[in-house]
Structures are given as structure tokens and as C-alpha cells.
Length: 444
Image (cartoon, rainbow, N blue to C red; front, side, top):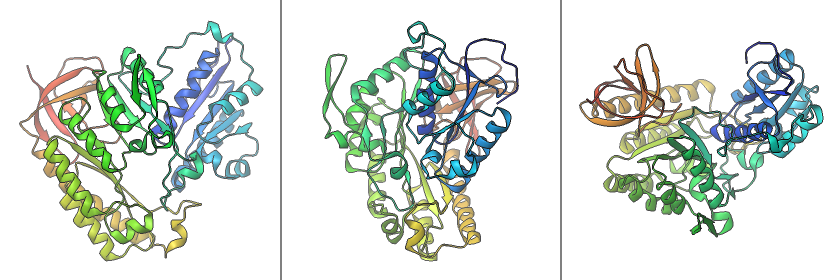
């Protein structure tokens, strides 16, 4: 946040949003409600009457970043409300910063609004303050995250999300579709569908029927994908657990209804480690399904994340992971060395791997994946691809292909002196590639 004086009379709230896209959506919902009540959102500490910090508490580095952000807000402003996952982790915030005004957990818009009202009462009639139907978004105007559920029913031993956000609670599909339609009408060109477990959508409500535009629709992953595909914009699926019914969505990708892109966190490949993680998928079955998906939709991009150095991981377990990486030939991959998150069961199930060994395995893993990525991207040289413009700078156009989600995947750099509105779709010819990015010229 910057420093600039508050010269207006409306009550102003500063907002710091940390963590994952799901936390970002929580921030958007809180900000939307604040704006609807007449509060203004300030970009500076000095221009704020109060500051809300939406924290992350998933791994140790995130906890440290969140505590630093709270400390900075207190030093620069003094009146701070804390929300988010770190707020749900016992007394960490209160013990470090007893002077904060209020502390809530994640997905707690009501509690945050109550705290703001207590310390900075609203000055405007909410019926006179106009907010766009799509709400307030913190992303660029051309893409937005669409959160379809909260919580998770899995009990992965490395994860504390269920203790922070609870069990799966799916939003009614009519409500989700209405939000998606409002976003499309507001000019959003790409929807990034997120949750803790996207493909479990509707399990908790037994896939009950809801209504959207007078049509009856099941609250179910494949039905949601099909109807989102009718909006005429890019639809990208994130955090998909590889249940069998995910296979039903692949034909929609082949037909161009939704983007041929699946973000599936496989986490590991060794059967022993997967069991220790309480991840039921086996690497052998995953490889068979990946092959089948590619047969149905040859252009599909598969992104995944993995953990190295999980407690008890042997040299053989790690080698199985490397072998899987080669055979799966994944397009986009992220990896983390295991972090002993406070409260995670995995901390107690086996001897911890030494930090230097965890980091060495992470380095070897990413080195291998860089080779795979380089080889895969080089095959795109000479192809014509559709890309979406993100921005234009003095060196040309920065865009993304259908294979690239914002912030986490690669970019397409286009040699051009033209300017385009973000969200514009262009056809480009790929002229070169690197480990993660593509270079192109516009097709005339």
C-alpha cells in the first residue's frame, strides 16, 4: 500500500489480500459488501480509516508473510482487522499482535463487516450506493475467479484446510451461473473455476436440482461445465480431483465448449507416499487416464502440483516420482518441498526428511520438469495459436494461450507495436520458445 493523504469525507477501508485465489474471492466478496454500504477502498495506509488484512496460514512461509503484513499495517495505520486462514489457527495472531481490533477465520464476510461497523460505522445508506451486478473484483477486468464451493471432505495428511474452512459446502448452481453470467456481461473474457475440490461440486447436496434462467440443472461438476461453456468465453478448471466422472468433461474440451485445460494436484506417484498422504489415486491408473484424455482431446493441457520430501519419502519413492513425471509428460508443473504445517497429521507419521535433502529433491524435480517443458513448448514453434491479450508494453504484447492460466503458467510474448484491450483474442504464429514461455508474431 502507498502513502497519500485522505482528502475525502467518506469512510475508507484499506485492504490487503494474501494467499490463494480462493482467499482472493473472499476478499472480493468482503469488498463488494463494503462498497455497497458506502465505504471506499483505499490504496494507502494513510488514506485509510481502518485496514483489513486477509491472511493465509497454509504453510510456514505464508504464516510469516501474513504476520509481517499485519505488523506493517499496525505500524502504518494502527487500526487493523484480521481475517482469513491464519485467523483460524488458534491464538497465533492474538499472541503476536494483541492490539488488533478483531480476528476472524476464512469465508467470514459477516464477521468482518460486523467488526468494521463496530469500529467504523457506515455513513451511507446502502440502497443509495451502486455496486456492479458482478461485484467488486481484484483481478484485471478481463478475467475473474468463480468460486463454486467452500471446504473439503478429504483428510489429506499434509493439509489443514478442512480444519480452517470446514467440510464441502457447494453453492447452488443457479447462484453460480448467475454470477458467471453477470461477470460475462460485465466484460470478463475468462472464468477460472476454483474451490478446494472442484470436481466434488454438488456431492454434499446429493447433486440436487436448482434453476437458472428457468431451466432445471443438477448441482454437478459436469453440468456446471456444460452450462458455463454456453457463455461464449474462456472457462478454465482448477483444483480438480481425479474422480472417474471427470472423464465426462473431456469431450466438452474437445468440442471447444470449455478450455482444454485441467489443473489436477496429483501430489506424488509412489503408492506408499500416496497412502501416507491419504490420496487414493494410483500413478498407474492416472497414467492410463491421461492417455485416454489425450486420445479424446489431443490439445488438452494438464497442470499439476507435487510435494517432495514428504515424511518417510525414500530414494525409491522419489525415483518413482521422477519416472512418473517423464511418463506422464505433463504440460505445466509446480512443486513444493514438504512444509511441516502446524496441525498436519503428516508431521507425526514418519521421520522428517532433512531440509537439505528436501531442497535437493525439489531442485532435481524442477530441473527434470524444465527439460520436459522445454521440449513440449519447442514443438509449438510454427503453430498458429489463439491467445488472450493481458497487457501491452513498450516491447510488445503480453498474452496467454489456452494452455496458460494467469500468474501460475507461462506467457506468450508477441512482437508488435499495436495496442489491444486486455481480453482481446488474437491468432498468432509461434516463432520461438523457452522453458516456460512462447514468442510469436500476429497472424495478418
